[in-house]
Length: 313
Image 1 (cartoon, rainbow, N blue to C red):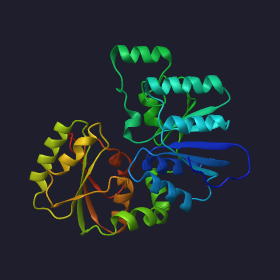
Image 2 (image 1 turned 30 degrees about the vertical axis):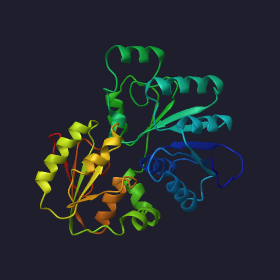
Image 3 (image 1 turned 30 degrees about the horizontal axis):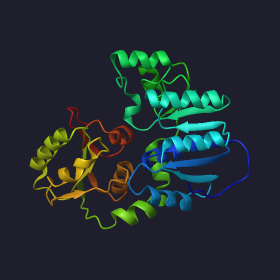
Image 4 (image 1 turned 90 degrees about the vertical axis):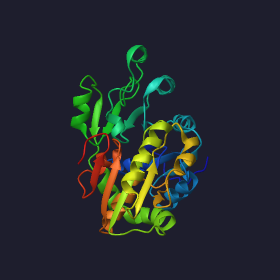
């Protein structure tokens, strides 16, 4: 664990963050929060140590920035320091249910919020059948924000969330500043990290295709790759990016299916930043995806999104 910047004691907001996209969401939330804030960064992604240094150096307003190997360690740190406000990226499933039950049992004064991260936050079918019934009986979350032991839910689309989960009577709070506007307002910070370090050598033209592969089985990914190779075999400047999956060990083999005409997109650079950066450079973008959150967050911008599950923007 590493820390930085200790300010005066007082009410503190503790944010558990395990992905760069979650950090963007936290930056949105902070626009409507007062008091000191702490980032509990969990190293669950590529270049996480470097991203940790970037946050420490670029955002000195945080009371502390700390690094952990596991989410459980980050939560326990917050509890040990008797924080009254804890923000989590998930409260779904048995493991989270047990953790949150123990947390509230040991520190009943704690106020637990769960914040949105991606289109998956609105999925209604995470669990089915007997497993869903058992988890609900225990008070554990079968959808994001559904755990009995969380009190507050932060979302970008409050109306949509309420319509999908009408029985949830918790405090459902709107995140006022959109994710895209948050990134655009702080673009210069992220340029110093992402663009200079990962993207400055990328060859771009006035038109860019980017393909997001995000099925969870390597066989399905293989079929997607073959389809896109045939579609884009003679098109310049086509990037591809794999979604984090449960077949990570297969990704190198899958990459070998793509020929040298395809540019591998850095896994540690969030697509939302990348696409907004290309737009700022007046580059036309075609983005092909399978229900990806990029379209969810950037739908109002001049990007041609093609949902390959059948829906086309």
